[in-house]
Image (tube, rainbow, N blue to C red; front, side, top):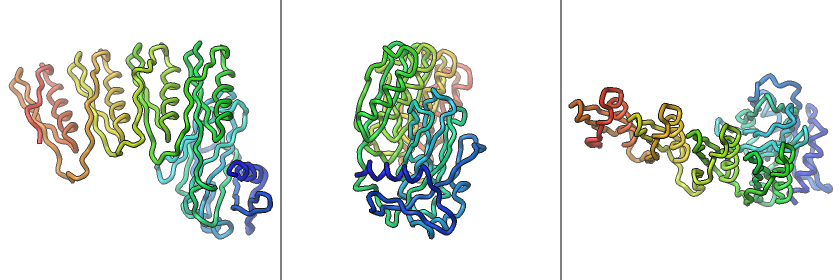
Length: 373
């Protein structure tokens, strides 16, 4: 039923625009199921960052003419680069809602996102994309009289990753149809060089998530780290594999270095610290999950000299019950008979700040944690 309604919605949205003082009704077989409101975008002066506040300027009038809730948005994308593969990222009040992949080999593609927010909040929505590869031709809103989660409940999507074993490059497809998802990934791979190397790499059911998940990957040939973030683990995995595989020595992007978020992980601010045994320097990363925090620390370490000395990260989550009282750590250097203090929102951050003060002096290999509270 959902595919029928969405297909009918796209048919109406692609060729109509709501005149002033009139609301149009989207129907399927005579049954009314919502209203649509389209705005054409004639230029791309926003450099890949489009605010709905500039496109739909009168939310009160739109609500009066249509409905009080925005069901979703359909965005028509024009690919200025025929070989472009990328994402359109949707934000609401600065928080990323979803990243939708533009993978079709056709020059025009539609991406749809479920929003389920009040019409009066239309100005809080924005989208971002790469203006070198894509441009937005139109945005159509789907509006409902009642706030609902989806037509008959949110369905699971299928995600498929194809790998070209000849080039070590990856391609992704996502759809409510398993066959369509596979076609997207397969055709994107076959459109590139060495099409005979395209192989199915991974296929999964993607469950809708309520928070962004992350994956990181290390290139063992260059000691560089890469991060991918998306609403699902499979999408995050594709993003990070794709980023690593497009750099030099992509045969160093090995599976054993892949780490991904646990969808059931309790979210909260994390701190991770990495020490370089070759330079005796420490690096701190912060993030809303352990993968991002550890990536930030490892990325900083890998960007310095002797990056083959970067050790494994040590992580800890900030305790929200501690309040405003900071942690303190005392660092001693027996080689120089000097002491250093570090403070921070977590014990690890306090240790890092103390270590960096000590490590900036001579004989940094002698820096030791004396105690923390």
